[in-house]
Length: 376
Image (cartoon, rainbow, N blue to C red):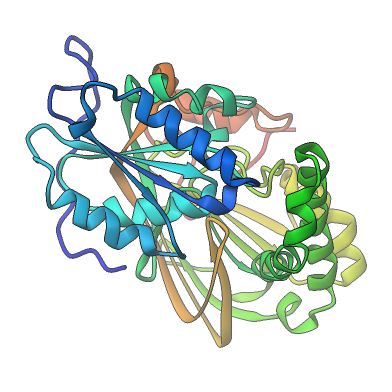
């Protein structure tokens, strides 16, 4: 999806006026795959409609039929909405439908984006904190939510809120997606707690299968990070706007979607045994234990090229490309925050100097395109 219009100048909500302006239109995009039973889907849609009783003209509900279907639907809806009063698009489902909705609203004047988390993967809202699914499912709270400015990732012709990974992790997501499709019928009939566990377990299986791909674990990349050369052989390239992904993982633990920079992890090629032994620490934000193997950078633009195809994923959606330029687009979206919650700065042992630099002001004392020096 290419951007056809320049980004409008966005300003954060400053209080003193109603959050839900008169005449604002609300467009709920529902992913039916996120609901085990048709009755669950019907119940959610009925709940949404119930909150607009007496002002039905302000509401539209679209049930997505296939991937990227939401993009055209949002554009068509936006053409009927007034840019003066604005409109909101709510992604009802998981990160996949949120990805579609983001690419639908990007660059549209007056647009705001919300997430109503019912998917197996709801990673982006974890940037606000843990255990908030229930709060973000509250339709009344969504309608009255506060729009806050949010950066996005621009990668190729797509936009992402949360992550862009290249290499082994992307292949693991590709394999796990195949497994999810293969066992979809079983996952649908099991109780939610069991199916959620199995859903996560299949991600683990996908990871195990990917480790045997020696081409990906040793692929050579020509990499530029804010003009600095980091070319070499890497198993994983992780470019993050948000801190969490993969259900419970937070490799780029210090990433924030409103700090104007991307967090970049470069995991060098190594033996399979070394990768397995250090990979779990990497996945849970303990990269600082292996400075000789993993570089952690802050940057605004990254280019990645390789003689072999690039296996990449954006917010869980897998793509193949030959070369890629990834940029941060600051304040690109107004994201609906339930109760006015800010994006949360995560604290992890070993990251004291990072937080101190951030507290010192914009840019802190950590230069872009340089390895972060982690205090012991």
